[in-house]
Image (cartoon, rainbow, N blue to C red; front, side, top):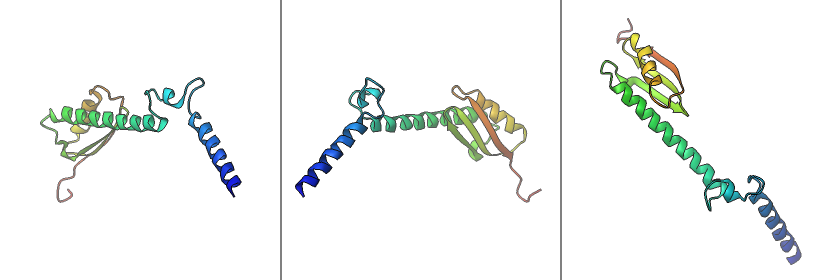
Amino acid sequence: MKNIQARALVIATLILAASSGAWAQPGQTASAASGAPGATGMEASAAAPANTRKANRALRRQIYAAIGKHKEIDAGNIGITARGGAVTLNGTVTDASQINLVAEIAKGVPGVTSVTNKLTVQKPFGGM
């Protein structure tokens, strides 16, 4: 019984040793490949999405601030999604001329690479 446990322990150790350097570039250890001293691959990959989400939120805030400078536009019904510089505008505006205006404002914000405009004109109450 002890012989089987010893074999299982050796096999588990070999698997662990082989997998720890699986993602490293040739000549680098896993912590050196991640770019952070002492960081594992899991820690580095967790930090990258967090930084991306932070940058996307900052870009959204900048676009909302730019739209807010135009008092004729009600940004309360506009939703903004930002992913790596690609921006999508959703929601409604009160006038058809504001659809293109909001898109142009968003394109003028530094960091915006593309704008998908899905804005529509808000129908007045009563449906007419």
